[in-house]
Image (cartoon, rainbow, N blue to C red; front, side, top):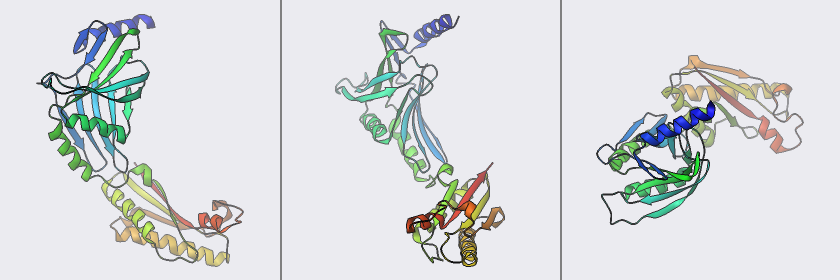
Length: 292
């Protein structure tokens, strides 16, 4: 029954493709319908192109991350393996020359192709040139048949300007990057250094942008050098400094929970401190953000 279902789906895909030739299945948007759409906010930006009967081509960037390019498929006919991407001239620009962009891995599933930023920019370059980046790979159901997915340059440049504007408004970090953060301290240090302030600035900006964040646990720890009483006080002061810095940057104090434990053994990262580096790891204030 499963084999029969696969055959039916493949046959329907062949019938619904934008262009069908013997041994060649091509998906693309026609000139008069090709469109790029931009969506985004301070957390993420996407620029997508609808490819009829196949899915979408998408440039995507999340706050704090590099841009990627991917193909989103409804039901990809491509076999897993290495696919060739070429830059092909559209039919209305026959004077341009076709050239290869490179070979890339494709997989079975909803995202058959994902490119990192360096390779995504190769695709951008060809679209700016008015070319059609085209991914070619044999079909999963036949070694004789080829599948092509073409990305249209029509209306691309105007959309890219909006995409760049969206990227300019992204936060410097995303939730995963700051959900668990640590401020480390030098021996005897009782003020926040520049690196710590930069980290806390990013955390404060994120908290104020994301209404889902409802709690920040701030916890101070020390190494075991010196007296336990002095260490407990040092952890208290450092936790307070982090707490107050966030409040000064506009974070609602009601969502901040501050604790301090000094040199309590259960909370040491390195239990048996032997070197200065061991002690440096234990001397810290941690932040844990919780989000609905």
